Every structure is written in C-alpha cells, then in structure tokens.
Length: 300
Length: 245
Image (tube, rainbow over all chains, first blue to last red; front, side, top):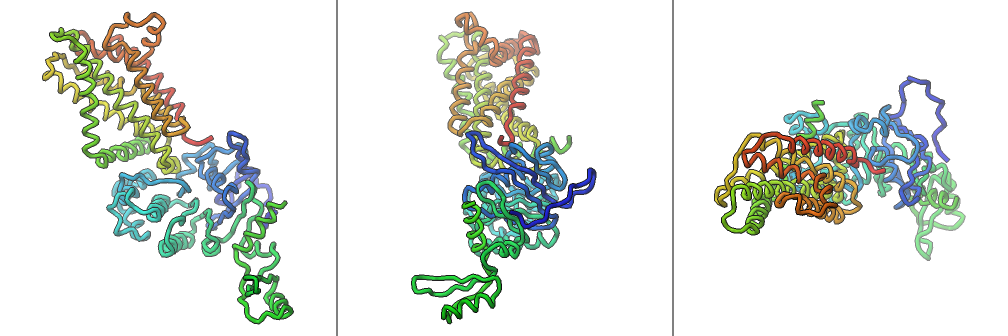
C-alpha cells in the first residue's frame, strides 16, 4: 500500500520530475536471500526522504543499489535522469554518499581527507583546500582538523564521513545512518547542516533508526519490511493509516497505557469515559506509526 | 581523460601518504627485504664467484625484490582497503575503477623501483660487477607491472582479508621458486618447464641478466616480458571487481 498516487506514464524525452526513481528493484544475493523485492520509490527533487525499517528489513541493500555500490538483480535506478546501473560513474558525480559501514583513511588527517576527496569530485587543489576549510567549520571539526582520522572517536569519524559526502556539493545526498554514534550535540550539528542543505534544494535520502530524526528532517518517510517498501508518504499521511492520529498516555496502574483517536476530542472523550484525569496528549509519534505499520506488514 | 589521470594522481597521493604514517617501519621494509634477498642468494654461492654468477645473482635479487614489494604489497593494500571499508569511499565517488587501479599500481611500481635502486647500490660492496644501462628502467617497470594484474584479482575477489594475504604470499612464493632466475631452466623437470616459461619472472630475470652483463638492451626476452605483462594487466583490470554483484 502506498500513499502516493500512481503517476501517468512519462512520454519519451520528457524531463523526469523526480530526483530519484527506483522502478521494480529487486536484489537476490548469492545463497538465495531476497533482500529487496520489487521496490518502487520516487523522491521529488528537493525533498528529504527517510527510509525506516527494522534491522535486516532491506534498507541498506536498497541504498547501496541507489548509490551504485551494489548491482540489482532486476529493476532500475535513475538519479537526476542518469541510469545508475549503466552510467554509474556519471550517477555518482550527482550523489554524495555516507555508507553505513565505511572507514575514513586512517593515515590522513581530517583536512587532507576532505581536500583529497574534493579533488576526486573535480575541484582544483586550491578549491579543494578551501572547501575542506568550509566543511570543517560547519561540522565543528575545527580542533580536529590536523588530527589523523584513525585517532578520532567513532562519532567524529562519522562527522568526517558526512563532510566527505558534502565535499562536491552534490544535488543528491544518500546517507545511511548518518548520525549513528554521534552525541546529541553533534547530532544536532549535523541536523542543522542537513536542514540548510534542504533549504538550498538538495534532495536527501537517509536511513535512520532515530524516529525523532526522521520527524525533524524528513518531508516523507518510506517504511520497508521484509525487503518490500509497503508505504511512503508524509508523517501525517502515515498517521492516517494508523489507529489514531492522536495519542494520550497515562499511568494505568500496571504501567503506561495509551488511548488513540483520529481527533483530540475523540481521545479526550475516551479518557473521560475511563475516568482518567492525568494524562499527556500529543500527536501519534512516528515511532508509534512505525511500530504499528511494520507489525501489520509482517502479519500480512 | 584529464579527470581520469587527475583521479589516479589523487589515489596515488592517498597511498603515498601512508609512507608518512608507516615511518621508519616502511624504510626498514624497503631496505631489509631486497638486501635480505641479495645476501641470502649470495650465501648460497661458493666463494670466488665469476662475474656471470654475480650478475645472475643480482638479476634474481632485483626481480624477486621487486616482486615482493609490488605484488604482495599491492594485493595486501587493496585487500585492506576493501575489507576495512575504505574502498567504499572511493567506489561511491565519481572515480573510474581504472583510475583507482592506475593510482595503486603506480604506488606499487614506485616502491618496486625504489627497491631495485637499493639493491643496485649494494652491488659494489658485495663485489658484484654490473653493467648499467637505461634499458634497465623499462625492463624493471615491466617486471613490476607483470604480476600486478594477478594482485588486483586476488585483492578484489578474495572472500576475506586473510585469504587475500595467503593467496598473494603463496602466489609470490610459487612464482619465485618456479622461475629459473638463480638456476638454469634445464634443472627443472620437463613438466615444470612450461610453467616456468609462462612466468614473467623467468623472462624478467633473463632480460635483466642480459642487460647487467652488458649483453643486450631491450631484446627478445624483454619483448616476451612486455607481452606477458600486457596480458596480465588486461586480465587483472578486466577482473577488477568494483561493484558487488
């Protein structure tokens, strides 16, 4: 079930309205594991899409096929109109990628790392050095600029990898758990940077286990379960598929209990019927939406 | 095309900066390996060796020293980058896989030539008389490149880092022992001679020996080495696994 309306067939030669188009994408690994099954995904230019799913759902497999790191078994991926499978070098010039499992070159210091990878994006030596300075500043890596990356903490390495993805100022960013391992302060620094990129029209696809992160940053969210993308839409659209857009929690004696409803009045009425006077009321969180919809998808 | 070579240069720089990190250990390896090879070979020769034996000894040490410093190091370097997930950063950048291959091979080549230069410096103190010629440079370059194709395939196709190191070392030892550089090919059993003739180190040893003896420049053996190197590099580059399937 998808919350997006089906699109009409695109006339030949017409410009693609989406920055990322995934059509019928499947990946079966050697050994027979079907990690992605017929995934259809379209990300509008300038949008930020969050990919959510439990561990092993197929998020990273999908992301690796979008970035061209992994060849699909069937189906196709286009980024800004470029076929990722056939034109992977050209496609990668359009994307900045933070892979889930990646290590920076330990023998390079932070500045060198960013400058060298900026040169791989076609910047001159001087421009690459300037770009490295800008990113060190915006990522708060100033006091670590001359440190070898092998001496950095896990969180700082992750920041460096985010910087690495941004060196070429690409129109599309693909981030696989970009803030994993970062402390809350560092995470907010990265969020701030991603928000500014979003404001400048960058298309961002990110996987994350932090629901707060997806709610803060993403225009749309797509949920993956058992290798299938079963729903995509705004958080509000996803809420509409749940048992309630509003949720009240209260102390039920045996622990926390919850009441859901499509409107706040509905929730308040139910609370009054139960005689609950102390409660907290808010919109259903993305975590609740995720838990409910992935459970339904697995049962299906 | 310009970006192709520019990217290869960046990859070379990334590799070359490892020397700064390795420091004295790198210098130690660069010096000890070739000298050790030379001294070991010399120890096997009875005292009062002729010039002919001396140049054969030097040729063998040059070939094997270059082999160890290029092929083994190349395979281990690429395998380490692949299994420690550093190669992902390059694969997800707009870098052609051949640029990456050219950059790492160039670094391996520079190491091999540095090794050769150190070995040649030790010829006079060891009483080995050699004839130096500019033809030695292209032949040593070909020697270094001749097995890099195999090194690339081992590094990018091995299932684990350990198996990659084992294969690279085993291949290096096998080629070293089966290449009649220190001994005439007639000493090998008939059935092993065809293997030896296919080994680039056999032809490299003979080509280098001919140059060091003053008997020739870029001759027939060098042409055979060129052909084997071209085939080996082509196979290696075509076999370079860039994207996971």
